[in-house]
Length: 603
Ligand SMILES: Nc1ncnc2c1ncn2[C@@H]1O[C@H](COP(=O)(O)OP(=O)(O)O)[C@@H](O)[C@H]1O
Ligand SMILES: [Mg+2]
Image 1 (cartoon, protein in one colour):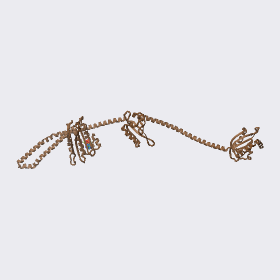
Image 2 (cartoon, rainbow, N blue to C red; image 1 turned 90 degrees about the vertical axis):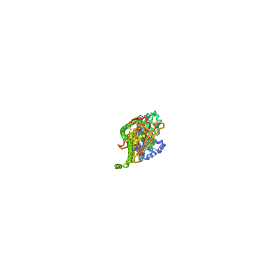
Image 3 (tube, rainbow, N blue to C red; image 1 turned 60 degrees about the vertical axis):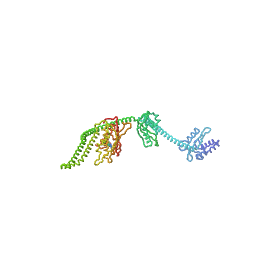
């Protein structure tokens, strides 16, 4: 059988001796032949090199020894031959095993060999070791796989990123929508707010104004945005506003509120409450002011009306209290005046008798003493009884003292007369109408009545009164009332000096202040000054208030000066004022016009 094959192959190759030689010398390809059973019948150099078998070892063996166990199991060798037999050719790649058991990747072509009659004679097999290519392919594939993997990874990552981005975009869109909504809401609030709201640059330019602010100041939005807040601020309020803004810019103030006025376009004034805060950049640099303006004109008007009403009420109350005080006092004074006038009148008659008869008593006594002298001359030796009586009564002393006694009685009576006159002068109850009087007389009578409080006493040196009277014409006045004024002021001066350890002097100065050309405007000035404890500014302010007193309960009524004020100012159209400092005494200055005009005749 084998010789058969050999013969046929030999025959096959006979004519192609040179070609056979060529085949045998090919080293890169294993080229060998199989008989129809698959036994190796020829072996070239390439086959030896690639498969590791020597020709003597392999020829005659079945070619399945080149296959792996698994391939044999799968009957691949038989399938190869069957396909080559049926189709003329088989081509494929697969693992093959070398003689040493190592594997290599082979590219295999099996060609069926037939004779002229078409009978199958065997197979020619060409095998190439393409392990390197296979490895390169594998490496490539691997590289490809790695690449693919990386691409996949990348893609996954990109997908992830895209997913995130999409989510982010959705989120942003939502946020944006919310922002837009909130901005719309805010703009709505800004535009429809019941208060004026604005953004103001640090130099005062309006950056943003709402409708309400435009309405408050009466300018259009465009006009506003072309101007500064200084342009429409009332000049009297500008400085305070600028000052506060300066303080804010300097960082001394976080925000401020003030009431201020704006000048509207039509020139009218609008009162507003302004509240300002400052917005700064992250660097701390001032960016702009936010100001809120509220129209308070109505409130201001109401306040003003209330204030006027209150002040009117206060005035009315003051008038009422002063009238009440006046009534109380005039009631008292009229009672006192009546009493004083009554006493004065009652004393006036008896003292008139005494005063009128004292002269006659003097003449009588003088005559009688002359007669006694004549008796003594003509009867130098009287009877012892008469002589004794003369010695007992000390006739010589009587003769010397009697005229003195009479003179002193006359002086006393004269003083009583003066006092009575002063009392009448002071009370002037009968003189309630305007009369021309000598002011000095009034002052003198007040001093006379207060004499007992001025004179020195056992352990008190008294008060010195310095009179510095100018030449005064008679003054048209209500004498009784004016005397009350002198009395009140002098009483206060005495009270201020009574417990004053230092020098105690009351200086009364009068003079005429003439207004040239206008006789009717001339004034009589009476200044009553003491060196007492003086008074504080606080007391000075309330001096003429009814019922204002610093004296202990029971000593002061607080009415003296308020009544004096009323008498001088309202009754006589004059003025009364006081200059004083604590510890430096007090000076009251009364100004009475010579010719009172249009005066009330009440009180
Ligand atoms: N010459 C004065 N020196 C110091 N204080 C005086 C003098 N005159 C008036 N005052 C102050 O003015 C107040 C009011 O005086 P006045 O109206 O006469 O009321 P009164 O004498 O009853 O207190 C006195 O309580 C006193 O404090
Ligand atoms: Mg008084």
